[in-house]
Length: 100
Image 1 (spheres, rainbow, N blue to C red):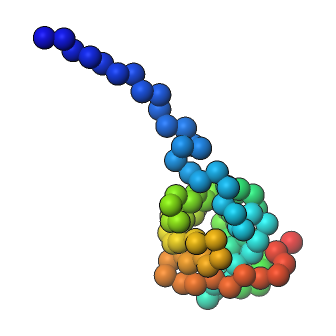
Image 2: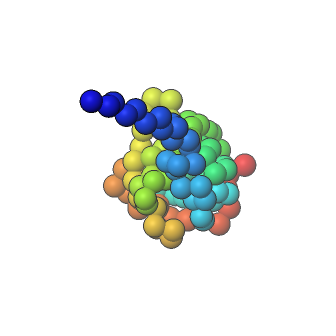
């Protein structure tokens, strides 16, 4: 009996996460009681109603149209189809400018 062992390289981040979350970096989306600003391809900030105070910072990933936003205390989940963003069951509204 011959035992064959295959060595497989571990998946890297680019294998798991869509490499270009088109339309999200540099945008801010308004939800019922918070704003989400996509700072870069993987960085995100959550703002309160006044758009000034940063409530949380974290990272996000998109896999097959599903988005996860990982914050210090929890993960928010939703979907992104290239035009419509939904997080925690709420549909976001694209804002023209990002908070400073």
